[in-house]
Length: 311
Ligand code: BDR
Ligand code: CA
Image 1: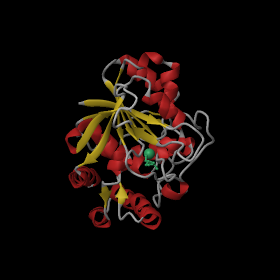
Image 2 (image 1 turned 180 degrees about the vertical axis):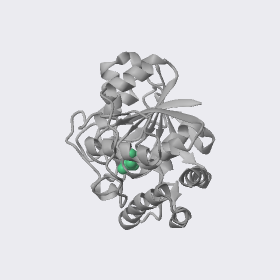
Image 3 (image 1 turned 90 degrees about the horizontal axis):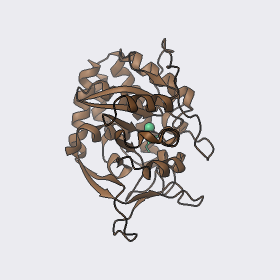
């Protein structure tokens, strides 16, 4: 079983990832660490706790993390994820609270308790992870692997013409993580924008009529409307769930070792991730990137898990 920490900015597809993790016996989610991103950090914590409560998984610790990027001003994504971050879904105020440790302390504690055994699935801006690397450099040799939803290599951006949202929010943090020496796999828009949960797929949840299926429908419908209106994409892109799949269903992805980097300059391409495919700089690969995916196979697997959990 793969053990991991979910570092997240919940967020509609982040919430789906929490549920997908709970529905997958191949993985054990040790903790959820929250970062500013789709919504302000404090709201993200409320969302994480509410989703866990909805799924009956209040035993999973949730920690508050960084509430702003390392250098840049705060950016949130209300237009994509709605006012509270969960689209049309409104969950009751959680009865549980976050743990007292800061996300960065919790990451350090969990990783050093079991060196080489803990993965990180990072599905928001990389601020918490970069801070953990800087404050506790001993985690570099101790994290098993980081799976990052972020970037757009051969794909256009979804935040600017060139940059993907998570990396754009904190490119300096991304740069620290990419060059930290921790093995990582980037799961960029190139693959996540192929994995679409369609309106027809969503109708299968409508038929179930449980609080969980109702949540999935109300949250996903919001992002579906946004993507169809703003980007002519017909479906809910399963960005974050695909990053979790990279941890335990690698056969669905085509992954290549590459020299990967991010533009941290304050110009038109700030936050753009890129690969040195021809190795102009004659450097060894510093990470892996997923550049293709068996998209419908993944969506079917995801639906199977989520439908079972919802019933
Ligand atoms: C990423 O940005 C966020 O809005 C999503 O939750 C996902 O992590 C996609 O670009
Ligand atoms: Ca996210």
